[in-house]
Length: 465
Length: 130
Picture 1 (cartoon, rainbow over the protein chains, first blue to last red):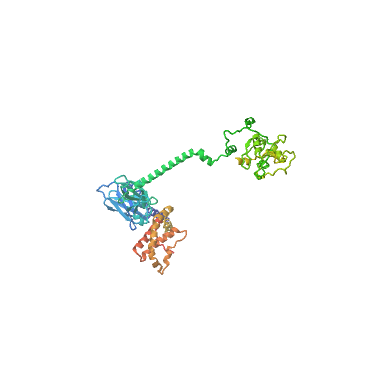
Picture 2 (spheres, chains in turn blue, red; picture 1 turned 90 degrees about the horizontal axis):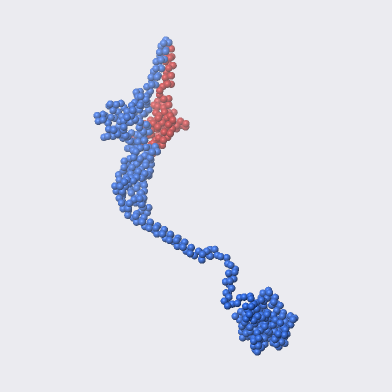
């Protein structure tokens, strides 16, 4: 009994391990999962590509041998998929030199297996989404944009209305000029622009397009080239470019010349006009005075040396009287209201200033000193009586003074006796001269109009002039 | 004799436990990234297409008095894989019975099989949905 129990236990355990060893499929593959990956080395060279959504929901797989197999050997290619516990294989259809198969499932991992009469089945893993070959682009259109001088190339692809490869392709545009070398441009979009300045004028060009998966998830190879499309460039490109370049050159030359002219003008007129206007010099009072004052004549005596004025009769400025007083004294009926001669400035300057008066006045040379020349006095005495001032009322007083009975020489200051002077004609004397004049005034005022002294002021002098 | 049978019965539960059949019908493993990438680039487009095609059958489904079939497409939280498996299997079983167009049935089957293939699940024939 015990022996039977032990035997049954061992038998059940053996059956259990046997079931585990064989697994689910029951296939006798080396790796135990039903695949043939490790059975024999994958030493068969085939190239395959897939086309997604080849027709409706079906995708396709196309394979061909890189090395042609022996003619006498029949080979079979199959696409196998592990589904559940089964390993399902689908034989590919032989079409001339290629093998073709349609299928729907692109999610699962697949194997490509080769069967031959001489050898066992050989398989190799295959990822359908990594060998994608897109469909050929079509409908190429070229449009010339005149304003921008560009050629817009637009094309279409069948994958635009399909699910998997929409917006996941890279397009390559190739163009050349009449059997020249091909130039390529790549773009993820369905249009590109060719600049007119990069193309020859009035030349014929050829354009073609192909596509490839962008590599984010789907990978693969370039599709076949589309049919070529030709177009001809315009002639206005060169003239436009040349005219624009000429305008630019002209403007640049004009600008350069203008800048040179401006520089020359600035350098030329900098010192004379620009700098004084921008930074005016501060006026020098000495020079200003020199400009204001009149330039003396060459023969004008400018000297403070008394010896140089030897020919000049210098009279002292004592007892100068107004000329009007003198005139009134001499001719009271004729010119009682004549302008009273103004006082001369007495001072260091002692000049002989000829007194040019009008007819109402006597034309007499008047001096500061009030000492009339002898000839003038005699002449005056002949015509009228004059009151000539004299600095000293000594015996040198003329008879003219005394003839009127007015004492001209009086030590006391007596303004009331003196004729009124026209204050408007009296200039304001200098302080020194003013003192002298004030000192003189009482003296002159004390004297009667009979004094021969005459007052000559600057205003009378200007009148004489 | 009684000891013999007891020994056999003792082994049988062991056989059931050590059965090579997977305890779970899905063998997803740690393939989260692969599942996500395949879903985004392939399966999502098929689902969108199926949704667009099902718009014409919406009224027909709602007119069905028996609404117990709506339970089969319910998704449980924290059980996404199991829910997806259940939905895919039930979709295969459901559309097989309904009188719908061949193209729609074909698309539904494509989505169901794609889902099961992506998750590496299979439908259990004898399992009944609650």
